[in-house]
Amino acid sequence: MQLNCAGKMLDLNQPAVMGVLNVTPDSFSDGGCYLQPDAALRRAEIMAEEGAAIIDVGGESTRPGAPLVTVQEELDRVLPVVERLTRALSIPISVDTSKPEVMREAARVGAGLINDVRALQAPGALDVAAASGLPVCLMHLRGEPATMQQVPRYSDAVAEVYAFLAERVQICEAAGISRDRILVDPGFGFGKTLEHNLRLLRHLNRFTDLAAGVLVGISRKSMIGLLLNTPVTERLSGSLAAAVIALWQGAKIIRTHDVRETVQALCVCAAARAAE
Ligand code: 9MG
Image (cartoon, rainbow, N blue to C red; front, side, top):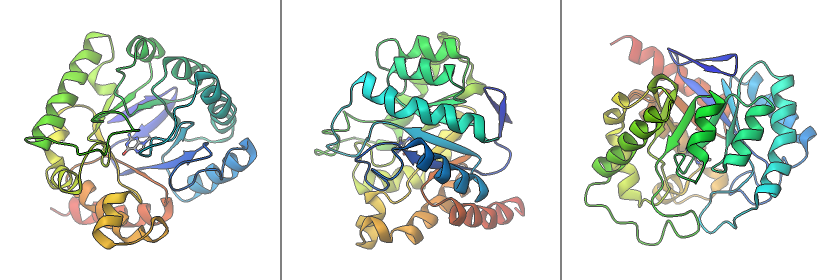
């Protein structure tokens, strides 16, 4: 299966790595590094050379406790970078946003995919995404980033996240976004304890029947830090282990800060999986 991302194809028949590019002053891992379009382009070029199949540009940090940004601030951060990268690179550029205004403008300057951690629930987002004709990634988030880690509770995290995503896929289809343009993501670390995250990873294959593909972002997240007792700068091995498990369980796209290493790990995993 291929996703048509504004004319650039994203091949889901092989593992795809999505490189993270935060154009924010405060993201938990690369905050402040790529605010200038020149720096963002240099980083994106490196990730493309390392094997990224798509690059995700975000202008609002979603780490717990991060401040909200206005529409104008987010537009000012994201648009010059999306436009520049779209022109310079042959791979698609996705926009990580929940704001319909940012979705609309990013699509206008060439974005190829809408990655929404709020699953198009903001007023107007569903209609703008449908009108854009772009593929979308619907992520599960319990609560809001500012408060999401305050005692998240589920009776069955896997069943509840599945039910939420199934409903969002249905709503998107009714709005005109066909299932073959939809990716789903259980949202590791977004309103989940370590135990919830581990159960979601263990049972990720349950989500594969929902849409065109499952996208997963675990790179450097606190679940890795909690398991290994390491700071954000020392979570590569754990992130790679999680990426391999996710791929083995049927994920199609892995969102990561460490593109080269993730591409290599997934290459080995995909070869073993193909030998089944
Ligand atoms: C923007 N962002 C941060 N973490 C993410 C994750 O796990 N998945 C997706 N789709 N987006 C994310």
